[in-house]
Image 1 (cartoon, rainbow, N blue to C red):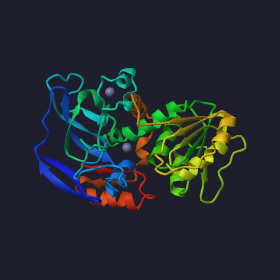
Image 2: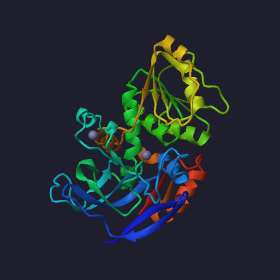
Image 3: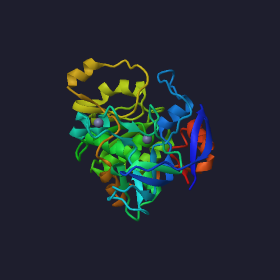
Image 4: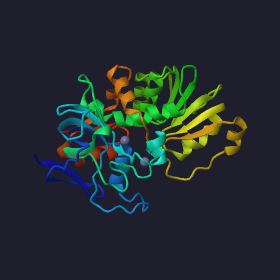
Length: 339
Ligand SMILES: [Zn+2]
Ligand SMILES: [Zn+2]
């Protein structure tokens, strides 16, 4: 058994190394990874591992956190998972002991070890990954490991829709139709929301939004985003300061603005308008307790998560895959690596 690991050795350069597979502790499973999705955060660190000097990242690091595969070995305490199971891995391993973990909001755990995130202690761009059984979820037979890898970004969309209390009868605006915008859209559709407007700057993404259940799309590069009745819930998924700045005008009185995208710049924001509407701003950080639900929604045919995959590359072409995903952001909705 030889492990193959893709190390980011310099910005925008991966080298694949062969090494021993990881040791397995009693509570872990060894998973042969089959699919890994490339996420916006992977591209951020790929381009600049220090994120403009914000982080003290020491190369090499291993990226990748949206992953699924087949269990090839289990630790002696593991009972929930068997060898041969098809599984999705939840990439954030929280401590299980702090007040956040005990409250069930383990996404806020300060000791979380999240794959491909600072301090980069783990990553999924490798053939064999050892992972706690408690964060490993069995997929039903008819689900693919490709769909399994997409459970991670879908979990973000479902968590965002929960935080915004999306429900039938609400009017929803989703700003940004990238992967997370579309995942949020599918989560809202699965919850029975029928009035969903999606905005983006690219027509191909908006076409996909229509296909996935949006009731209206607006290309912000040509049309102004307006609504006479305004929106009960706005999901900002573009991570853009200019879309965020539009939200006080677009939101309905008593509405909710859910911040899903990561905005890396300062925003000039009209809090006065927001105050007069008594609207809420809600932030979103990853997710907690969502994987079972996400897997069931996909398995039951309620969420066609596979639709967002635009390109599939073999693992050996990790450099080409990231290059494409980074430079062709418009065409590459979701690039997935396959073993
Ligand atoms: Zn992700
Ligand atoms: Zn904790």
